[in-house]
Image 1 (cartoon, rainbow, N blue to C red):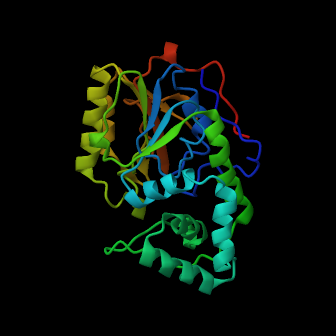
Image 2: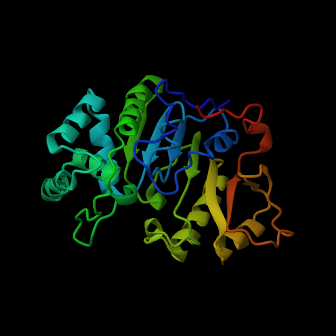
Amino acid sequence: MIELLKYGSDHFRSFGLIPYTGNKNELLPFIASKIPGDYSRFVDVFCGGLSVAMRIPGNVIANDNCNQLITMYRAIASLEKPVDDMFAIATQYGLSRDNKDGYYALRDEYNRTGDPLLLWWLTTCSFSSVMRFNAGGKFNVPFGHRFPADRAKNRLQQMVERRLHGRISFACEDFRNIQFLKGDFAYFDPPYLCCAAAYNSGWGEKEEKDLYNLLEKLHARGIEWGLSNSLSNKGVDNNILKDWLNSHPEFNVYTPQRLYYFDRMKRSEKEDNVEVYVTNVPENRQCLEKMPELI
């Protein structure tokens, strides 16, 4: 069964390598309880801030189609002493909650050189911890008056400790181009079609339909998967997802917040956000005996 990796320094509940919109920190114990324990590779298709990939044991492939994000992860993972090396950068630029000039000097240097290590501090200290680039590929998020030193150290230390628990490798592929293998467990946490966040700007109906087509193909090949998504958000419904679920009663659908089956046909009341977890893993292969607790 799946036991989430636990890190001794993890007392801030700051999972993942960066803060990231849509992370699954709170839902991860539930998701872990639905994953079979005998996968050969765990493929995190939309890895985002690594809140899932950093806690899943064994051989993990963390994929995202954001090249800057994956380049940054690879650079940090290659450091012999990530904590020391990354904090040396913070010292060099005098980063703090109040040093706006230091932040903008760092941003200018990143936009000039593209040094991926600088991007980590930019994201950590930017307004709302947003990673955003303009049409020319330049990082353009303003200073956020943030310098969460303890949390930043904690996140980097998790990267160090993750190496002791198994291999994590990084890929930068469109989800439609990933080569899934027999024995994989694929986890999908795509941008939510019914949410208007900037993070979802490159995701539309075509991508949504292509995703469900891929899930059907994986199911036909005997490859197990899990999907996190939202049926509705602030009065906006994801009708493509609803129709797809209605046409596939063979898949198990859960509402993680309440831990019960989602009734596709009878549910009528509106909620601000109805998040679901969908999987083709049979219940007798799910790790239901124990739900690991986050530290």
